[in-house]
Length: 465
Image (tube, rainbow, N blue to C red):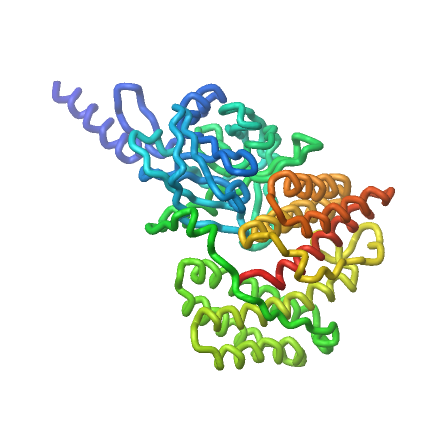
């Protein structure tokens, strides 16, 4: 008996050393991932927590992301809508909706409803660990037909910018699926459905779920009606001539764009959360730091310092932040026009494919924004930037037709889902018409990019920090 006891003790020690758990189901490594599930198993567990979102101009999807009634979706699903109704799978509808936070760059929105007996919160995975070739399952409400399940593979991971990436999936998505969850084979949410190409099911994209996680820490929300009523101040964005960049190298331009983009990324959320002083301090520090690094590139340095000096004459931090953002946008605008003049490709990198045609970027008057709310302008610019980020990458890789399809799909979706904004819609429709006249897909991509840049330019002149 004693020798048998010694054996048992030795087994227990070995089990401890190797991180094993001796349980009723056998010996399992403590660090093992949850077992792989079938699409049917994932759907059975997740469908009760996937919601339908009804808005005044369309439908979308979302999912339960917090026990207090938090619902994750795409920003473009709710932007510009006077009313949002969250419909749970059990049929309950909620119109009293709070906005907990938005991320326009990632096209994310976090809402909250007051609901008892809420469906289970869906588990979130780590999108940083996602790899091409992994299985993925998508659940959404295409065309409002109820929760629909599709599966496929992760086709690719596209790093659009240092702080922006998308997951390309082969799982087919349809209108109404935007905002729905994308699952890995363990039933964890690894993305939120975002882009759809109406011409091919292999051009579907999702926002990595890690971009959503910081938003889940926000404690205070804003009633939807108040969020929609926010008005933008009058913008005074300087319009610089290209001569402002005389003496500036590509390295200088990189310092400017990276420095200002990082400041906007950090400062804008603080501004939107009501901390205008923190936003201004970040903008001011960025302008001074970027200017310090622009030896021999005096024009942009002077333009940024003009913004600092103007802010010093203003009384409130709200106005100071706007003054700095106006200065930023003026400098970024002239850099964009310089890039267009030097024939950079639709995605933004140096041209390596077919020679670009002459750029014809429309210069729209601000009056084209008449009848277009701030939320809808944000929605349009977000959709355009998202299309450029994804489509431009495809163009860079030589897939000009896919780029065109992405651009066209974004325009068609905006035409069908964004109310009002007749002037901007006409501008985008003119781009589609011009693209239709051109025979080669590379030229079509340029025509659509010209239309996009014209619309982004006029929105920038009537936009917010």
